[in-house]
Image 1 (cartoon, rainbow, N blue to C red):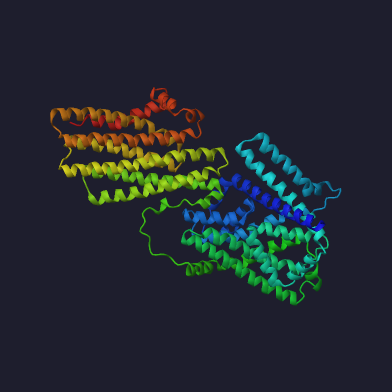
Image 2: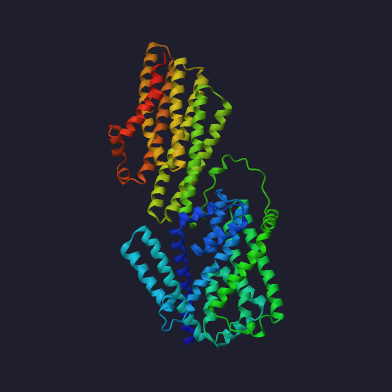
Length: 600
């Protein structure tokens, strides 16, 4: 009965330990997302810098799996190339050892020493849990939830370790435990055990923590010679559970990153096993060194040394590992798909919501630029029909529609993961901006259809109508350019310049409709071309309206009044209550309406 109770306690402790690692890791990822993105974007082709970056990021978010999955996603997004990704993956192995160093805190015996008591997990864990629960239950803001998760995860992790330790104690000396220890006496079995257990648990940090827990119990009989092969097996296991899984369905370079991770860990394990076997045969450090019992700290230190030395030895051969991966994962035939910049959003980015939001902004800006160029082409086709250009517009419109469908699903999934209020507002803006850019792309195809109608009816615009269209098309193309640039650079000041130009375009449309109506009455313009002209004005006006909507949504993120009532904001500035707005509107009227009125 006591053994049964011990096993239940061990499994319960393991469950709490795994949950604590996950909650703390999620909190760390969410709280450091923006900084994480800035760090990763600054990775250069220098392998050493990449290794340090990978180690730092993994140490911060407490998960080599998260670092590698994020790296693979950023390859697909075009932020990182293969060489940069490989160096980050090498560093991730070093960063993951920080978790073991944190877990070793549980072995501290404070006694009456006040300073040691501050680091004693018997003190830290309850304090962390209390602080975390206060933040989660009583403060209840998004930022406090993130910090609360870190504290709760930390506390639960060590409570789980304590339960595991208590659960292991009654098992010491049983026939099953003795057989298990005998099994680990064979280094190859030790490697196999570490590998299989890591694949099952899917966390190298958790597996090392379990080994530390068993070793920390007095009389466990775990020696250094038994422990080091298990640690090497754990390193092999983690590359199976991360690199291979996260590269499925990804780009070729992402799959190559997974191959390099496996090669790196496998070569490192083989080299270290050979070295350790030779040293053990030579009784290096004394015969007693290999058969002495190890504790939590010794295991943490060995894992750190093992990963550091492996990186030091293999970093100079990073280029060779890259070439090996390219031999194993060969390039496909060149893709004929247009606009690869529209295919960068990968759900693997969800692992770091802040990075996912930032990449989504870049992708939406890219589709905005495609829509802008398409609309400009549509204006050209309208005034001078070109079937080749018309075909390009239709092809790019298909790319825009495909992007919009994929992005809708991506953003909906991401909305369940964002933690900060700013990211939440960014997401709201993105969800409303994508349809606006998509509609601008639709208007480009509408212009092509109008041009084709003119062709089929053998109709043309009058010279005056052509001059008018040139001016208003120039205004609309400019507002599209300003909108895309403001969105891409997150420039609210530039966004403020959009509405004065949009109002100017509205006034131009009214003037041109009135003029064209008179031409139709006077018979100086055919009915067919006249109707096309009127429809063209509608699409030009709607395109500028979409730009206005995007600008307002950008400004609303940091202005609560605009966020609560978009229409009141527009009514206020249109009423002439903003001096800067009036000055910009006057400048735009001088630029576009004055030459429009001068056309004879």
